[in-house]
Amino acid sequence: MDQFIVKPLFGDGAVGMFTITNSTLWMGLAVLAIIGLMVLSTSRRAIVPGRMQSIAELAYGFIYKMVEDICGKDGVKYFPYVMTLFMFIVTANFLGLLPKSFTTTSHFAVTVVLALAVFLTVTILGFVKNGAGFLSLFWVSSAPLALRPVLAIIELISYFVRPVSHSIRLAGNVMAGHAVIKVFAGFAAIAAISPVSVLAITAMYGLEVLVAFIQAYVFTILTCVYLKDALHPHH
Image 1 (cartoon, rainbow, N blue to C red):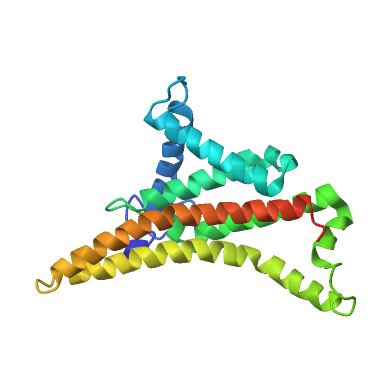
Image 2: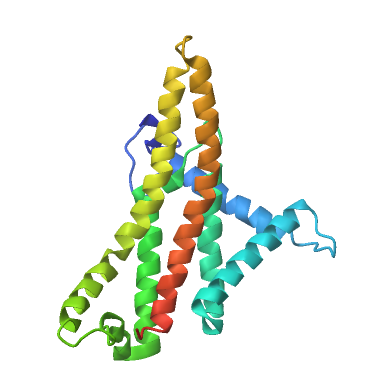
């Protein structure tokens, strides 16, 4: 698990609140990569887009359609926030696949902050938009009257569990994949099974490329679902 250790970028002292670490570096690189893709590559937009402009336009259209389909037309105004979340997570995931890199999204300290930001944003937005009507999210009016109080408690618990599942799903999947690759890499030193180990590493790496995108997609689509609940809380 050495690959997941957060270390100071300069020196060997303890990691404090303002210490620049390897995690800080790779989060900064993720931000720079996003700026390069979404800003610099589209600064000279062409009718026939180049490779980088095509990727930027594809990502833009993909997330915009997701927000519009799930949240409706009134949710489109929150597209920049959802787009920023997706781009940061997917870029950090892919950068983490580079040799000698540090995967920031494998740390709960990162994913919990992202999940809590979504949770607080959605909750505040729900009360601002609907007032006390936002509480109707927990009251299942279509259920029999006797069951509604029980369902309200279940809905309330599941609502507050959202940031936990939201963050653990992302960090857990990313961490597990990297750990499995490292285990197979350890067997590569044994000559008798090294060919099998190399094949397993190759297969796992291909799977991790897929997971890097899927986990960013799942985090984003759940954000859209939670946003829809804030905008339209009625069951």
